[in-house]
Length: 310
Image (tube, rainbow, N blue to C red):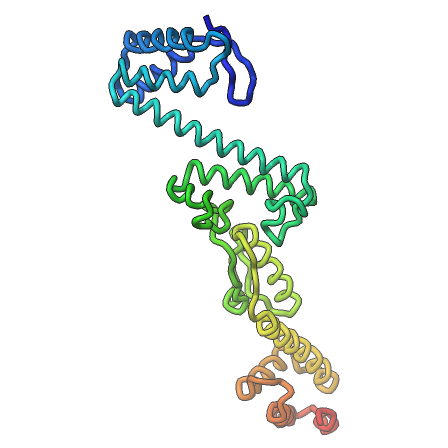
């Protein structure tokens, strides 16, 4: 009587008929046709054939499963046999994918990127670094999961055969990939990072800082490259606001030197009125002339102040 069975990895294991019986009853349960008498009959038939066939060697797992299939088709219903065959095929598929995953993880662990394609797949990641390798471990595991558990088998097979390529497969169900960030639109009125609300920036420093926050916050949720196509234009708005602030402050100091009754709000109101007429550039000639005209209306400002603006 056969005492051992050869596993798929070559290991020898003690042969037990209970495993055959359990596999048959699971197929019956899947088909809603549980019948322990039939299960026992099929099990005995399989054991009898194994003992007749394997007199000088131990059977392999695959050989035993082949005999189970044959006897299920003889002594059981076609539905039970079908369930067993499908289950066996699915398990084989999962084992093959795990084997490929282990190979990928082995390459990530022991091979340099110059010898392992998997470590060069993403140009943004150095697979030879500790964190780069860790990212690749997760990436390859995710791919195996999606191909075996999520994606339609026909597409998984086509991807594996090279007939199609599923781009960024490791992020298949997580997020979109790659985007451009319109900072001008984002900063208008402020924006939320998900953890808090940030008001519209009012200086070039705030513009630059919030640009970094926007990229960082988006990178946490968005896979792929992040780009800002109009960074200089967006930052120019911050430069203008900062220029105006400094202009207000210095003009106020200057005017206040001649007339202490004038407040900072008076100066801001004056500058804003002029700015509505000449909104493009504060240094515009028309802007300066208009400002001089309005400043001359202040009774305590001396003519020397007007001259200094020339």
